[in-house]
Length: 118
Image (cartoon, rainbow, N blue to C red; front, side):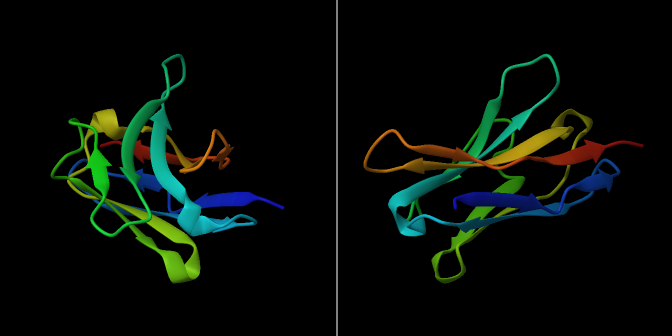
């Protein structure tokens, strides 16, 4: 049974930090690129960061470069998104996505809410 379970969301003031986690199970983790997306109600889902199975293969949206860091621990099937210097506009539901490097298979988590507010 495939599962992607996000955790770590919450309420934080501007300038604060959060670390999101994504725990994966039920598929061969190292065959998948892992992405973090975010979505605000009424808007399209936005790709925030992605990381391949190879160390150093991380990419970021321009809006989060220098503030967010994506990392993965293949031995534990875990992916993290460290979010620093959070802004009001970072408020969204954050989703973990696994995309196969060998085909079109996609898996999604249920999402975790991040709210940046005074």
